[in-house]
Image 1: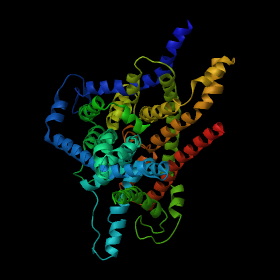
Image 2: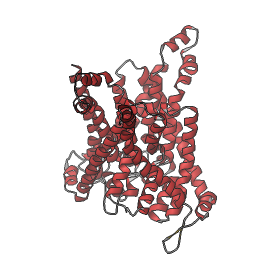
Image 3: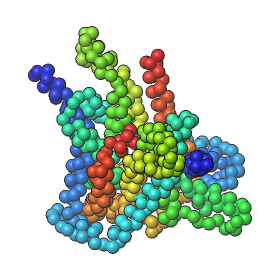
Image 4: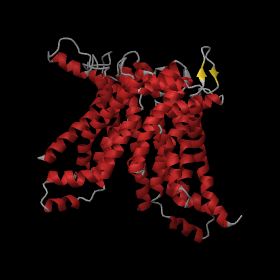
Length: 288
Length: 261
């Protein structure tokens, strides 16, 4: 074997374990559940192999599923918006601060390393019947009985914002940090006010980062089922909760497959649209 | 004026991020037998009780073994793939990168369902093996992103110098490339361990009955009410998951300055 062919083969030898793992543990399973979604779970609990449209008919026409899907998208959209409103100024502050940017950024990234389940449940300590807020309110005599503030849609959104905000800040920071600050000075010297310079120069240039952060917040938010279980009430199920119910509780795996693929189709479409217009590079910058 | 508003806003955002976590840590030292306010005194009793709780200790063991194995496998696969992507001109490199990071582009619930159902079809039931396979596949993209970013900065001419001075390719790899890559490898492994240690979304689908990791154990304990023990466990988790990356960061700094100096 010549040196050239060895040289040409080497990268494929290095890549094959990782590519093999992704193929075997992700792509083939996805194809498998696509096939599985057309099988039928019979009353006896066995799967009937075949080509049945029943699961898809149920998933696509049942108003219960449709309503929860729409509600899930609504919750994800509100979460993303709140993350953008809270995160953008913070990212701007870090990017333009004269102090130690790395420390400021690290500080905001710390909660990102703290366990998701701990951060979610920590809100029970704050808002629960025996939490900090109720203790303050009763202590100050504002209310006589503790108020139940938890287990509704607002607390689900609160938990999601707390979980996803670092993703937004990091992505916006990465794009703000890459903007040449002399551009703003130039705009100012040409007669623009600070606010105008921000709106017409800095903001447009930072939109890719905002979009990347927004995509991450939306997709991760719409795919969660833990936050509604911990901080939501009985009627606050999100679409991923339906998947969990179908697979783990009801053991109706063909229906669960169809529901999973529906979620993948909706969120995958967003990722593809994003990739079409902005490309994956921006997203990778924020993650790496 | 505008800048002051931005500063105040940022301060509020930082408080929003830290306040709930600070309350967990504070309450874990509460002497009261309820996991709530008011603080009745300072006490380590919940940590002592934690250390005597069999279920939690078991969960810790499971999480640590799972995290270490995940990190070992995921880092090996990720480092090899990153080497190929950074060091060689591979046709379709962009396409390959996208394929390799696909596990984080697919919602984790969907990944969890697909893997569970497919491996079950292959007669692999819910087991530690399934958990490990799942953790490897969704930590792999993070390892590849982190390692690739750091590999780019290692200059190839150092290796070429070693080769031209008579080192064999094997010697060059083990004595030049690998030591230079060590910070990248450690960072990747640390990232994989932390993500695996923290995961609950996929783990709840894959774990066999009776096996709990730390996050699923906390989740199960939440079903009742929030006990001071959970807060103590939370504090330990915070120390672990924040302390480890910070330690790793410091280690990477130390390694690179020693080489630089």
